Length: 300
Image (cartoon, rainbow, N blue to C red; front, side):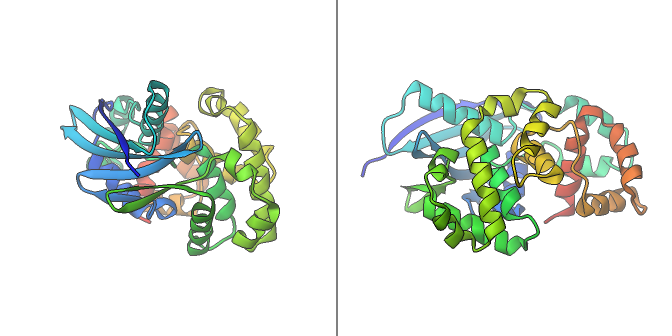
């Protein structure tokens, strides 16, 4: 089978350090094995309109004048519309348009946080490739061991994911909601081996199959949070996780033990939720980025 390809370039908002994105993906458990990575490239699959598209990214330029060269691969010819959808997904996934200037201006004056900023300078948030994948992960990881959640996600990917072979490697794209909507409850039960998660996943699939992603990305934070919480199986913590890691909505924090520990280490004293929130408020609408950097520097 012949492959079709298309090349082009992207201009991330500076500063942008592609190597930092690669480092993050290499250590982020939910997505660690979903792509091939090297210092100079990232190759990954996304499902668009029922078919797998593989994209390869390579950095050009510098951290302060960054560029990304992309090559897209498919088993059918590209159209302008298809290319635009994939480029939008790549830009969203790697938060290429995020303007970190104001965040950095606040951070440089925070003596405790400044070393974290120096270490992660140029890191734009790496999201889940789609908010739906993030929502599925939220359900699979609820009250579950990380390894078991990862195994369940891999089982979904292998059973329902669309694949494409590029340069001898098979890349699998996480299913779209419409594809999983056709799966029987029996199939999901066999894969997940957990009745409650299978039920919750069914509700997530149905909800995401009916919602416009533009609403999730752009409408008021509180409206989107309310919509998410109305999906059975998504509580407060899962909603904030999806808003932050699936949609890049940085206005509010998802506070949990790992973040409290990371803040305590960086700020040099035991951390309460109240004390954490006082520090976070200095970052205003950038508090989510502050937390993202803290979690990242703490490691997996």
